[in-house]
Image 1 (cartoon, rainbow, N blue to C red):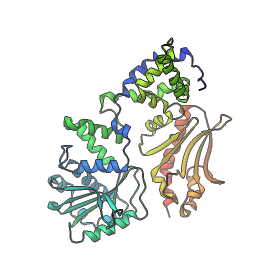
Image 2: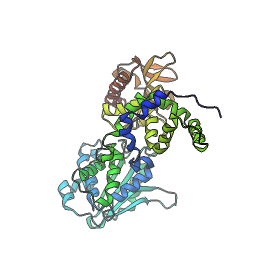
Image 3: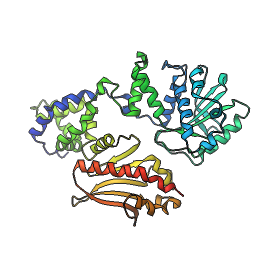
Image 4: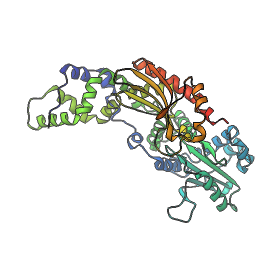
Length: 429
């Protein structure tokens, strides 16, 4: 194996003696298990079903049921589909006072409730039946994926057919972490804010039993990216980007050559050869892998994402990054695409060309766009202060920007806010 080039002793010493590095070192030990597991949509649905079950081990009774339906009741009056929702018996006859005074202790909660005869047929993510209150709740949960073609329309039709002689109060909730709306107007669309708020209230009131405190606080931290409720996470993570910038050359080298360098260190340890200062560095890497993984995430332009989140104050956008590029996307923008896939049809990005010049782009993938929206791009470009140029992609903005981190974050934040403000114009008739 070809030996990796050496890194300077001075760089290693500076890293090992850095007080900020030592401050953050324990962060990896106490890392939130939800962050390590990265639950998918099915797992989030199971967690929700567990929280909504009043007899489960979270020991909060019907607290989460009340939080959910109270939010639905408070939200529907401002919903775009209020003309349909207000015909629903639940919204007609229930109010917030009724919810607070009613016990849902006998509710039965099912994850993956099957509503078709075939084994591989349609299933509602979470279903709740409460015979005592004549209430049925159906939840279609999305955590990253998009609604299938006419999914909520078909589910509503099938459920109404199945339940025509059952509970008069039926609540259909489309729960989407990324704030997408249900295609069927009979469903009320909610995001995860209600759950984050419910968990935060328990934390603030110090009302969580010790037996489940770690689970509920951990889940709140995962959803909200708020580590303030955990004393082990009260600050160290925010220093990762600063450490990565300070020791950028060393960390880039480590990320690229870590396997080769680890082999060299192992050989010296096994053969009892004279120890070198880089051995201390790689022993530290093996002892605190989560800490170093976090640092490696910030060794390109990745740390811009952390700064941008703090600048914008909005957790509902996604980003991807590399050595000299950074791209933002928002899940709700996917409604303008022809296909339900992971492609980012709309991209707000910064790229550094080989010449070293940075450009900020707002690009629409031409082939991905639905025809009815593509016709409106020109007026949208005007609202964004750009001009539509048709090539392989539809370029709305191409703007030269200063090649430093502060300028990149400032330009991206400004353009993102402008996007959020004007993107709805594509839906106007």
